[in-house]
Length: 206
Figure (spheres, rainbow, N blue to C red):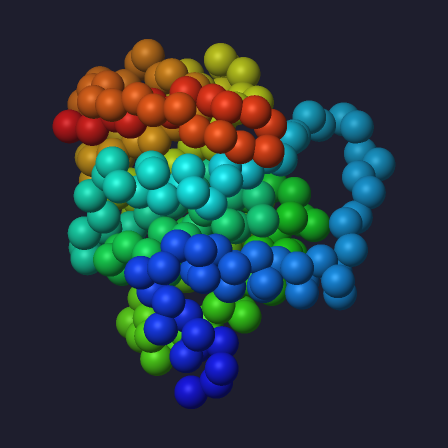
C-alpha cells in the first residue's frame, strides 16, 4: 500500500489530517493544471465551495446508508463529492459540473483518490460527469445535493419538478429553498461557511 493510502487509513477519524490529505491533492493538481480563463460570457456560472469543516457538519445531519447514491449538481472541483465518497457508507457518488475546466480538475482528484484508496474504498463507485444537469439523467440518486447559491428561481422550480418524478430520492440538500417539492418536507436548516460567504442550507426529507 502506498504512503498516501496508509496516511489516510491511519487518520480516518482525524479531521485535521483528513483535510490535509484532500488539500494536498488539490494543491498538487493546481500546480500542474492551471485555471483556464473563460471567454464565453454568454452563460453565467459561478463556482464556490463549502469549507471542509462545514461539510463535516452537514454530513452529521444526514444519514448516508450503504444502499444510497449521492449526486452533487454543480460539483465544481469535486470536493464535496470526495468527502462523501471517503467519509460515508454510500455505495455510489456522482458529481455533475457544466464547466469543463473545473470538471477536469475533479477528474484528476478522483483518479488520485482512487489510486491511493483502492483497498480502502473497494467496491464504491466514484463518477464525475461534465455537462448540464438538465440534460444528464440523475434518476439513480437517493440523496441529492444542489450547490444552488447562484441559481435563479426558475432553475430551482425546474429542478423541483424533476425531483418530484424521482421516487428514489429521499433527501435533498440545497443552498436555496425549494417550495415545490411534493414528497419531501423541510426537516432541518443550518448555516454553512463557504468561499462565497455563509449560506443557509435546507435539508428536505420524507
